[in-house]
Image (tube, rainbow, N blue to C red; front, side):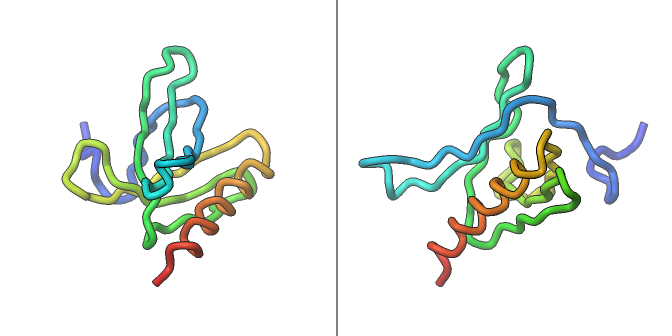
Amino acid sequence: GGDKDAPGVWNVTGIGNIKILVPKGEEKTARPRIVMRRQKTFQVCLNTYLFESMVCDKAGPKDVRFTAMKADSEGDLATYLLRVKEEEQADEFVAMVKEYKAKHAD
């Protein structure tokens, strides 16, 4: 066995659908969230907020790398690597995060 949090070690969170949920109407003060559900069980495996200093960029044509809060921690950050089916999906994800960051920059 090895240390699951060792540098350079990737942990598979799951395969499924990932969405950026943007609050509407009265919830406009709430922050958008990144939510991922596992493919077959629909269990939530990632549920985190977008934040102004998060890093989000393309790591490959269909790969997106982003920082997010670990679900089981008190504000600790983790780096996630997201692989999508189509390159356009990766571009859209990065564009949505960048748009949020631009709107909330100091």
